Length: 389
View 1 (cartoon, rainbow, N blue to C red):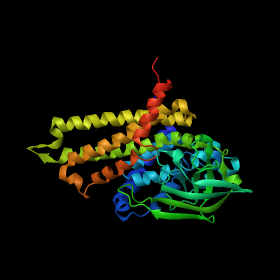
View 2: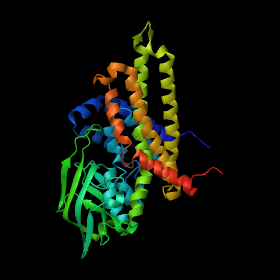
View 3: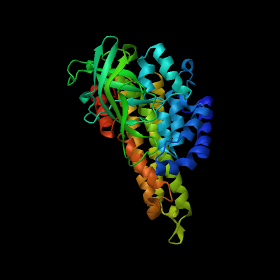
View 4: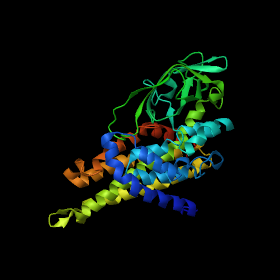
């Protein structure tokens, strides 16, 4: 058992750490306050080769896998979860294509993500179908060599910048069907007739990367843009399962950034003839967060290693969900405790703590809420997929 990263991943980690400190950190507050997409950081990531980390070399990526992307996102998220989300969006919409798409689909749609010439977004949720995926009402009807899609997708990260979308729709005759074979994945191009970006959301945090609606009105999609097979609901789940460590990395990075900042602050802040850091109660809070972060890191790196081995099917779900659940809950806890350590200063925009605090709340909701993850973990224990003898 080797807990050391290989040399190539250590080099990637160091590169991302320097880039995050030099380029991302100075931009974090402005991205949040202006709520403007940081095109300059996209170009930095592109020039550094970070947009193709999880994309195979045959499609123009570096082949660093989910673990490589996890390491990069952890470093970037120490300063900006919006910037980290930009990296995450290189894998979320492309995942289903890489898992089940044709060579032609990978070459046409995934390869341009790696070189930064295109961007993509993932469209699963609907106003009445968040955690209840089977409740979706977007419908796809076969018409000759095309499929015609109608419906509204919501809470889509990167919707305004995307050139194409991975869209899930009901292909069963009855749109209310809850059979798993009633949902199919499609690649939908932004410029197609009947495809329109709807309203953009006013978010509490993770500002700068727009979240909003995609409106589909008699949108024609070629049959060749079906990802995998018609009736591929499991593809949605496999794609999300493989994403668990990548979302978890956003949580680890945020928690690390918050704790590092708070630790430096309490070492300098005088109180009662000492510094805040001299008080045992403060030290204990720092220690507990450090333990939580390291536990989350071990869960997350293992989950990324598993996902890179193709271990994202049902029997592995508890391990993947543990990483997402624990790391994102740690982010919320760390941002809250660290804000408290700064006291009134933590509540002010002079410090990044209130930004960490707002951003952290997104992480326990997106790509499967904490409650969904707990349900998946419990099911794994009950089914014996997670067992200890």
